[in-house]
Image (cartoon, rainbow, N blue to C red; front, side, top):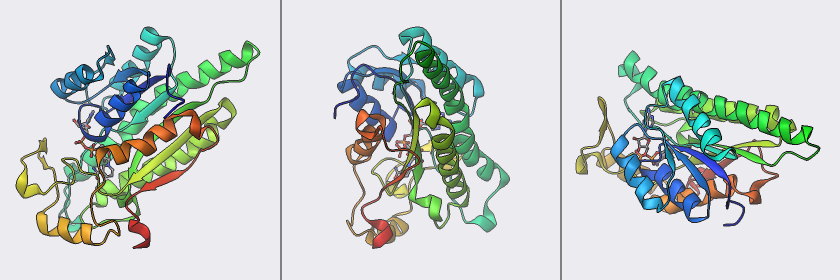
Length: 269
Ligand SMILES: NC(=O)c1ccc[n+]([C@@H]2O[C@H](COP(=O)([O-])OP(=O)(O)OC[C@H]3O[C@@H](n4cnc5c(N)ncnc54)[C@H](O)[C@@H]3O)[C@@H](O)[C@H]2O)c1
């Protein structure tokens, strides 16, 4: 995909899964990267896989300082900021009547507050860069905010916390599309169906955790879920990355406020 070369992009959650896939795809197309993940070792692995020298800022997106540091790294290292893709997150599922406060708050914190913590400083910097370009007599370049929502934002069994947070991300993104328009900042979200990462693999076949949260979907629930999807399978990481790349690229310079559904036709099945 064109329209990526030379852009400076922040990617959170770049240590694994969709965030890693996006980081590698951006690097392959000549973007300059600032990468984040909670976990240092997978983050460094992603950096090595890019074959380049991205700026790395490990730490939790629930920490406001990490968000600020990502933007500072982009400005100090590359003197620019064109794209932020907020991919960090995990699931901690449970039926609502048994959902603890910790479970609710952790998931709202990582997805909704994490998106706020990372996107707000980047957005503020993008606004200033656009203002400076206008003061120099030019038109501001198109800059992109890409957030990650989910099909679960429309409601999903056992995911009240995640659904609420992912729906909140859509409201935030659409608001940024309106507020950012006069600075040529475009904001879009992708709502993924099941993509083949540790979040959607059979829980019985892996032991992946974030804190107390066991990742993955119980096999029986997973089988039923996939049977409800017209394409009848999970999407690959590459199939998730393509739409994110599009939203980050110059091919999407007139696309803003969209919720791009990437879900194997789940909504019409
Ligand atoms: N896999 C799916 O089916 C699916 C569907 C819809 C939405 N999503 C969303 O896509 C995004 C990426 O998920 P994935 O499937 O690639 O999962 P993944 O576990 O493969 O990758 C997510 C990465 O985010 C990191 N992360 C988790 N908490 C973090 C924190 N507090 N601060 C910084 N980094 C943190 C993890 O360490 C991990 O490397 C998430 O927002 C997820 O909710 C995934």
